[in-house]
Length: 270
Ligand SMILES: NC(=O)c1ccc[n+]([C@@H]2O[C@H](COP(=O)([O-])OP(=O)(O)OC[C@H]3O[C@@H](n4cnc5c(N)ncnc54)[C@H](OP(=O)(O)O)[C@@H]3O)[C@@H](O)[C@H]2O)c1
Image (cartoon, rainbow, N blue to C red; front, side, top):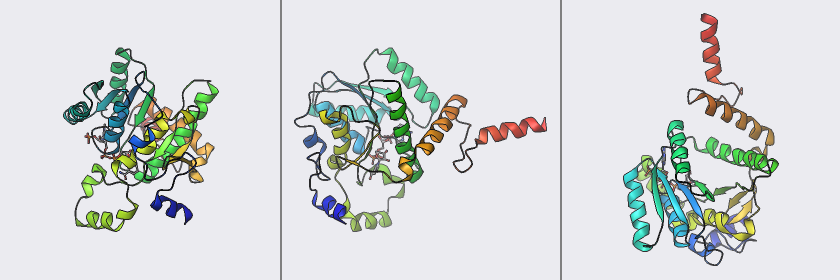
């Protein structure tokens, strides 16, 4: 109840920012990003586009991977019209294809640029399950990076709820009514981009890793989201799927891989 009130009023949390803070406000005093290269996926629209605009305004070089190159060039042009000195590289990437991801990685490596920030606005259909997977994956990657003593931090962010193109496949009267009824709870796009920009740039978070942030403050996840056993299982399944290709389908209930079952039953028949 108190949290809902705090959200509606937009009162500042421990970080000094809250639900109504915008991406520009949270990056105002903290940083000159001229030495930073940031890859931002999903930057052709919505929260990703605002994140890209603001980080570019603060000086970051942007790499914008997109499946729709025309949309990415338009996004680049919009940023350049506001900030003619912006340094923005557009590259092809379809996040639903592992091959495309691999091609992107080798193309990016061939540019010989540093990678200081990777901001992944990975849009997906199986919403709740995929968001849980992101939380678990963040924790596991952070843990592994710590063990390796790598100077890399990884965190996940809840932007809040905002009307973007995310609901484009469900546009219509019902969606309009749902957004109207919840309008007091919705953020603007600049507010929705604030938590990402805060986590990506604020000096106070330089060592923060494996954390979850909401409304520009650290927040706690669900019980399942902090389950390290599940995080480790997800990691193992992901490693197998990545190494064997997209034909492997992990069943979260049995921990089995359909790929394995299919190939085993095929072997048995032979
Ligand atoms: N909006 C919300 O209320 C809300 C709430 C919680 C979390 N989020 C999360 O915030 C992130 C950004 O969402 P948004 O609301 O800003 O959505 P959006 O306006 O629909 O933006 C999604 C972006 O992802 C890109 N994209 C989609 N499929 C892709 C693919 N296969 N490969 C490469 N790029 C692809 C889109 O590019 P195209 O131009 O090619 O379509 C677009 O740039 C998502 O991860 C979403 O789940 C949003």
